[in-house]
Image 1: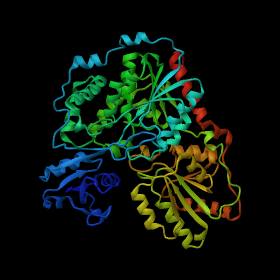
Image 2 (image 1 turned 120 degrees about the vertical axis):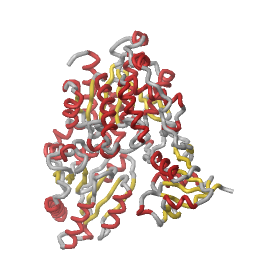
Image 3 (image 1 turned 135 degrees about the horizontal axis):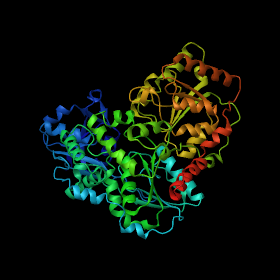
Image 4 (image 1 turned 30 degrees about the horizontal axis):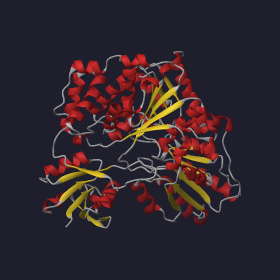
Length: 589
């Protein structure tokens, strides 16, 4: 007879747990802290209030949520002891993928790092200057790069493109990249194995991320991670503040993220996988920002030049802190101290947006000469076999390509379209809005509830090549930047990766971000579209109507200054990275 259980977490991860655990357990329902879900069904099962679990005798509660720590504390506070945490661990194997590999952890109410000690002498030793291994390195012209990127194919999505294309064009430019990335993992991320075809022949070292629950670490592993922090900051005050943060249990337990566990494994295993004396440059990219510890310690031990790449900002980002660390001062302060020491050690800092530069200069006193902006871009070869339709679409077609999440609301535009249709300015049978990619559940629900005229259509996740083929057919491409609370000065500071492929498609771009954003400046300079504040309903409506009229008149809009656009090709941006490599290897400005 199967043991009865309740899954705590009526979400995507809860759905994953349900599909796997149903073979072993009789799942009688779900529980969730979201009152909107109570009494409704999820996966065909009732969703209960947490308080109702106290009346269910002999029930195993299995937590399937990223907020497992707080939920575990909540359930123990209610007197429930038969509680475990579900941990899914995918398996990156090209031919054989076991999708049912998982673990269940009993966390009780223990705290991590309770037994860990701060040894000042050990911290100094960990952080000592180059070891004797440094002398094994020979020749500065070998141009061999250890490319550390946790997010890497077959993981898919916009986050992998920067690293994938750098590796592809470094190899074409005479460098020899060796990729260090994750093996087994627990991510709910789409996979696209076709991406690996672009870097055939590149050596990829995969080290498993077998744990993301700090409470499940052994005492020895906890001390090892504790030592990683101590070796960077060398401050007993920082260590004590960190332990106090954990005791309060009011924020993320592992900083900057739980991938520090993977970093610890990499540092223990890398010497068995690679002769580091042959490596000339270490490149680390974040997020996850814990990957920077790899650059820090490998440089310290081997004297290898280290380039620190920021796809996104870390401690300087109000948006990141607001959404991931709840703006708790102690947590942010601790992270900024870590980041300051890591940046101090790197030989060069690369940022995906020039808007990050001033933050580094002001907060960390980084020399501007150390920082280089290298944006994301588009790969010309991705467009080589794609035919651009010349005939007019049957309907005026809008397209959003990519992932829709966070505060990037699509509702303003949908309501504008509804209004234009209701006022007979747009024919409901002559307009459609296509979404290619992953849409956060809340936005999918909102779109479905507000789509009065059934104009929205979903293709779901498409592989990278197919997504381009679909998007290039559109009459207008929709782009969302950040806006509002958590965005520095209310102005979007980063470029969504898709903007560069949008520009290469030469279709009109309708962009939503704060006035004065770098997105607005980019679209103006490349002549590829127009940016509007999210609440500029009148301006958005007129822009949409103007382009709808052009479509009705049979005019296929090709836009953009090709000379400027080509500066964002992946080949061009990789050449910018090579210049950074050359500068730090040769010691020239």
